[in-house]
Length: 430
Image (cartoon, rainbow, N blue to C red; front, side, top):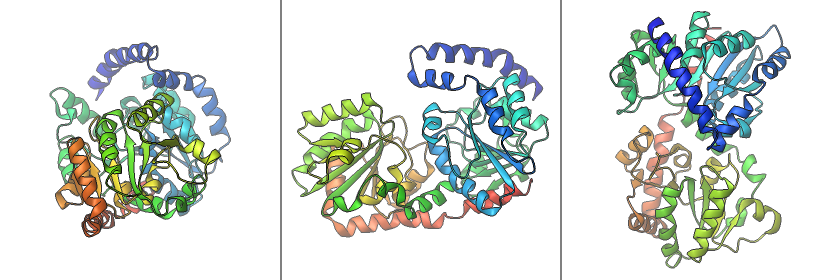
């Protein structure tokens, strides 16, 4: 490990730091992340000093909003289990940090500092955790190695590796072995992930097949409708044939919008709820312009809430985040974005509602999407014509729609239960 720590800290870290600084000149998101980390340590110290001294501390590192959603069942269960623990969550993504900032199951939320050896040591000296928990993929070496050096138990859950992961490349594989062998326990999501991770883990008995907490989170979200009802009246869509297009990118819209335009002429009362992956002003303005050229009427959620009581338009554009999972419950069919590029988003969120799922061909990053296709609980579409024909099938054939939807829902039912296993594992180290 010492060799790879030297390579990482004297070569990769300086290069990465310079790259981040240069990127901040052109990318607003990177700039926001750098600005958000100013006075990180003084601000964090103030927050930590307010925590009770008699409670043990659990540190979670979470990369993005999506991973925060996956961690929620574990965070909630820990709070329900006992009030003897303080939970500290570090966030990497600025968009995630801005949209989370506080959560009832987390006592302190902070940015993760840049992953230098000094920053990692200082960060851990401030929060003084009794256990460190990483979620899914976002493992920062210096923070992990420094926790290991200080004798802090390291736990990784929802761990998975793609078949074509770069972690197996020559040289890089040796580095990743040094990284993954730092963990006391790794909770893998599938048997295939166990097999792949075993190639990086010397201690095979520390590698467990646990399942994926995103199934538990999807089930919990489907039962809690308060957040959705606070911003929109589900009854307003009564009588509409609703397609929910979730987590979309421009690459998805290029195929989806023309197909939807054609369907409007064939399916009575057809309506789309469009949920962009990142609802920036630029994205939404461009989306509105595209709908206008297709002669499709659209309205933003923020404007609908202020000015409308009647749904007399054809597309509702969601210009906020955190609603997508519940919005799937309003649909008869779901399209999951990222599936034309850069890679598909969460397919479990619509599956829990028992509706058929449609997505593009870029599904390599999601074992759940591949499983749904194998079971015929979802269909892959490769272009505009595919989308048109597949959506027309589901909106005109109720029997087929229910059959495919039931298969999708069954996958969720079979995979509930990972959360408690992870919670028990964390508590065993405290």
